[in-house]
Amino acid sequence: MTSTVTNLLKALALFVLGVGIVAAGIYIRRTDDLPGATLLGVVSLLASIVLGVKIARKRLSARTVRAAFAVGVLVALFEGFLVYRIALATPLHREPQYVPSVMQSAPSSQWTPAVEHARQVVRAAVSDQNLPGLSVAVGAGGTVAWAEGFGWSDIKHRRPVTPDMRFRMGTGSTLLTAAGARTLMKQGKLELDSPIQTVRVEDEDPRFRQRCEQPVDAVSAAIAHAAGQPFLTFMQQQVFQPLGMDHTAAESSTEENPEHVGEPEEDAPILNIIHDGLLTPLGGGRRYGPETIATVYIPRFGTDPRRGVRRMRPRNYSCFAGSMAFYSTPSDLVRFGLANDGDGDGELVGGRVMSLLTLPERGVAVAVMSNVTHADTSVIAQRVAAAFAP
Image (tube, rainbow, N blue to C red; front, side, top):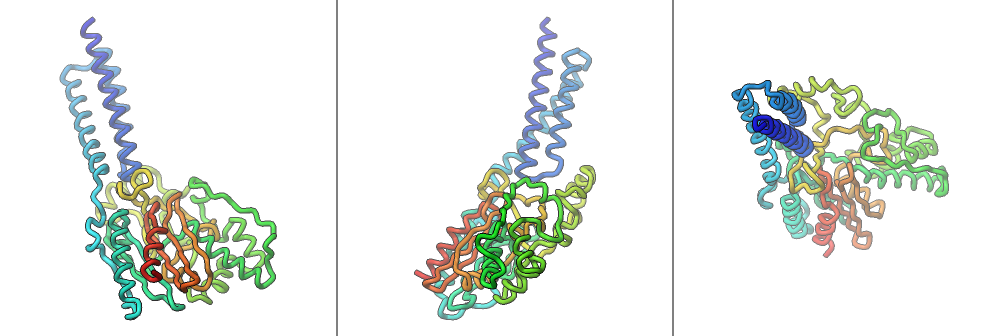
């Protein structure tokens, strides 16, 4: 009787150990995007069930039982170390003064004091919020007075953010689309009360996993119909080019995400493991698109980048050009802001990535763009604006 109870307790303990391993594996996969973590947990759980049943039925020797527990504890300790490492993620930029930055040209002497103050504000924000990269531009006196990139556009390769590095605007794309609609209204081709049904785009919308040569959101389609030409062609010719927004465009249906990660054409899971677990550490692996667009990151867990960040799985936004598929630079956005009064923020997967702030009465426009979601870009824009328009 005693041995039976002992075996049942051993089987239960092994099962609990397996559950703990799979739970830790899921957490690690979600927060650190470590390939194979969930698979390791599931295999451990299945093994604990099989071995637990055999222990309960007294079909395993004492040596085998000890070996099973030893392996399980080692796996649990390894995953515990990974969880600990994630929980105490090393800040990307520990000291504000050491945040790297790139500026194409020095500002005029008129704005030098404001730029120096704004630079300190931005560096402090990048360090405090644990942002991989941030790009800022200020328009004043009818031109771009200052543009500078801070941090990294790609963490792994330590690729610096430059002023002409393009960032995804997310829902901030609607600021540009609204300007296109206003252009058509002035031309008498689109009326304010025209029946346009807006489209609500959920984070898990299946259209993120497909590609569209022409946008399918209703607003873009209505503008294209009124303009009598493709939506993106109209935006380039009537909105971007007149303002000199040479670095602004919409996500391509063919260029970005060349390996179809997250799309129906993606490789089988076993090939993904080879890609991420073997080829990537050797310098090969996936290609995620052009290097002129900043890599997008998301918080490892929750909505706070200070808990660490990880690369966001690619999504294709070509179906939603007018809603969230534009990318741009802060310099282009301040050109837009100086010509079109109005403020706005942009979000990706529910987290803010950009802010445009205009002060028409002072002739100042500020654009801030980040490559991690849930960045507090609006506060940074306000503090930078305060330096140029105290």
